[in-house]
Length: 67
Image 1 (tube, rainbow, N blue to C red):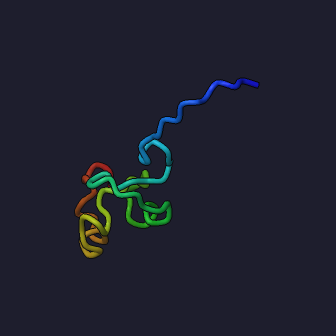
Image 2: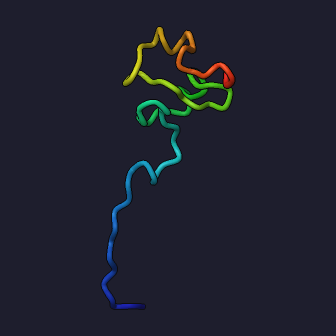
């Protein structure tokens, strides 16, 4: 067992999680939100932090080639 002190280095929270994020603003969203409001690959192009639910339901933020 080593008695040398270990050096703790914090990591950015964005690197520590595999949860989906909004591609527009970077806000973390749930997997269920990504399934409902994301494109066919569950990529979220807009979330409640950067758009309205009306805009998200019409898929205006999803590029046409990904719909």
